[in-house]
Length: 145
Image (cartoon, rainbow, N blue to C red; front, side, top):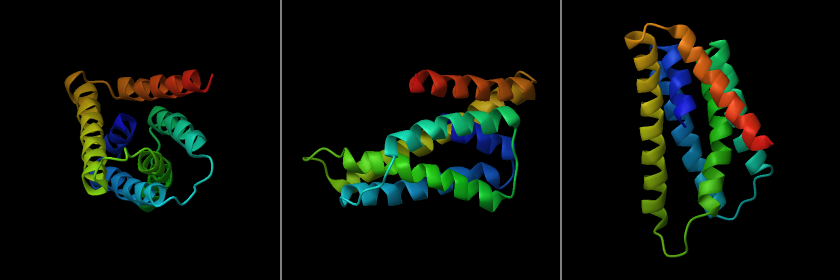
């Protein structure tokens, strides 16, 4: 989640809001699918792949059309949301549970944006922001192993 915020920070402008918004919106859709019992294949693999991809996107400081960035982000968000939707506790309110994971995710995205800002603007190094992507991708490799 933090990685999505860091990548959004690198986009600047509308990307700072569009990329995290796409993630949260599609994560809610994925949560509804999971809660409804609709199967989504390769959920765990999709989550793991998202760590690797977002780390790589940050490391490469990748920028492509914002619509495509939002689509990629949203596709990965489906996996994250589906996982939340299938793991809802039996005693939890679906509405409150969804609001909780959506708000928590948005807060983590905001933390990533803030972290990117802190590293680039306060420490003066866009290169360190890119290195954080390498660290994120390496964490994904470690989870894979």
